[in-house]
Length: 105
Image (cartoon, rainbow, N blue to C red; front, side, top):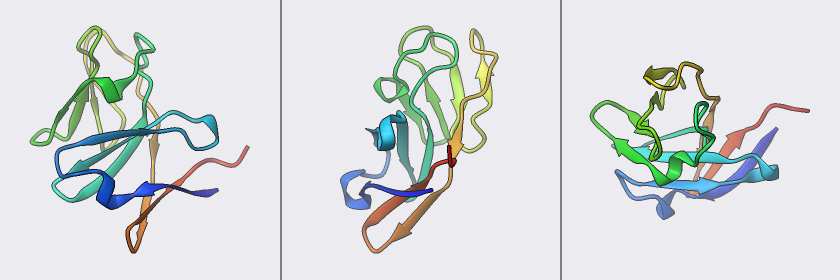
């Protein structure tokens, strides 16, 4: 299901934004003008990744609680203590509107 989540212009290069379409917590990151979306919930500590740290060079997000690191491209857990991946979501841009593809229930 395609859901509009925000305006692209709301997320500067190198920034992140938390959204919750249909009550699904999602983090959107602007990495060099490319928008990537992953679950906003750390698979280890259940904390909000949007409160963490974006590394544009590595295209990763670091959890603010225990420093687990996740790939923004694949959702893979890259650094301990997380060992489970997080969900990724396709992002579509239409004009200034950003859309996320959510799985159908």
